[in-house]
Amino acid sequence: MRKFIAIIGLLLTAVCFADNTIKLPHTIKVGDHYLFAAPPLQIAYGAIGMVEVSDDCRYIAFQYGGQLNRTKINYSPESTQAEELAKDPNNGLYVYDRVAKQSSLVQRLAVQGAILESATWVQGLSLLYLEYATESGYTAAFYSPQTKKFTVIANRAGNQPIYRQLLYVPNQGAVVSICTAYNEEVRSPVWIEFYDLNGNYVKSLNPKSMLISKVFFVQNSALLTQVYDRNTRTLSLLELNLNTGELFPSSQTEISNRIDPNQLVAVSNIEHGGIFLTSATHDYDNLTPISSFTEQSIPPASVSGSGSKVPKEKQQVLVITKDGLMGEVIGMNKGFWYVDRSGLYVLDLVPISAKDYEVALIDVIKRETMSRAKQVGTAMMIYGADYDDCFPLAQGWAESIYPYMKNSSLTDGFVYMMNGENMTEIEDITGTIVGFIETPYGTAYVRGDSSVVWKDKPKPLAYLKSLEALRN
Image 1 (cartoon, rainbow, N blue to C red):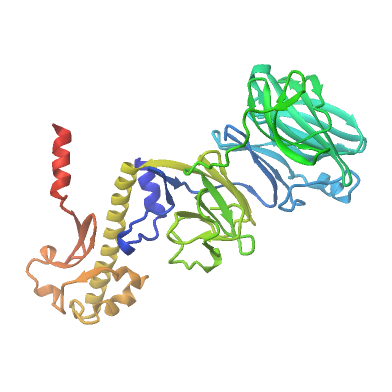
Image 2: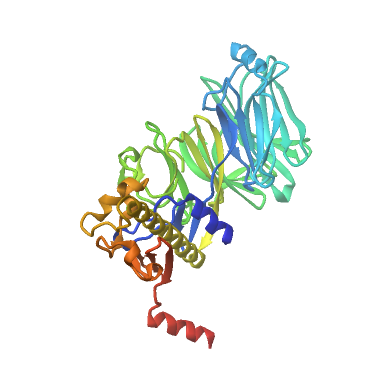
């Protein structure tokens, strides 16, 4: 908790008192608690391609290299870009460990005539599936970030890439690969491959001439799937028996599209850059362009995703960056990654209870208010040194001390109580209050020697009674 308060204090730039609303920077309310966006950590410098996060949210795989653009790479072995990739000593597929906070090279993007075309995590496992294009066709492998070992799982002839959805089926102890081969003209039917955790081939299934367009989840020994029937040209929900390969009607007639209201989503402005986080349940038909926000109207925090608009100010938003190109929330609000023109960044989203949030809020407001009061008091002392030890006149006092402050807004909310008095003639200068700044939680008083004291605001009687009841 103390660490959180300290970080908030360092990042604090402004506290909003408008409409009796006080906000901490870099925080957003989610349900009955808050999330704090920790300072981002840059884990890669330069051009970034694919970025994929493992199901357990621990590992982030990303393609890095000077020849990459910011889209998923798809090179053929015969292309001149393959030669360029091979010459680049820094390009490669990397995995970042969010626990150890370090990145490791998995493999170069081009090695011995093979080009890494795709990388995706197996659902339910921290296992990375890699697919390579070679002169003779395609090959694939598993990579474990824990053991740092590769396991070749397929070698096949031909030049057709394979689209795969991979997931782990616990009761079969196998990785199931739902495969669809396709080219520019023909998309072939689905077949299913089973591999054990050592990468050994187990069996294959071919569910007739239907195309499985989406897999939702594993249920016992079956997959709930959305299937396209090529004969009737219709979509339906069917269960796929993983033992026989048969498709049969599911008792479930529809898939719920209900989104957890506490889940954050990333939204980005493709045209101007900039990424922010907001609730997944927001109505995106009622948005305003992010570019129309001014420094004052953007909530004091920062984030990234897909879209071109942002919620209106009444909606909760957390701005992560105003230069981001793409990004995604990690898991259920565990963190966030984003890419801008300088590289790849990762940050943690730290849950804060409402009680701890209020404690941090009060502490930050106290420190920020006392700091502002101190700077105003110091400016008065410097003014007095230049004007025969006199305080500024009440009329126009703020303008009088502006030359002695870095920011004229420091005097906002400051109540000035002097009127040109000579400092040397005041008997108790340290006991004289020259002004104060009041907040909902207390008041910062500036004394005649520019020192500042804080006095907490008295608690309401109802609050004191509730504390007494708790003690008893």
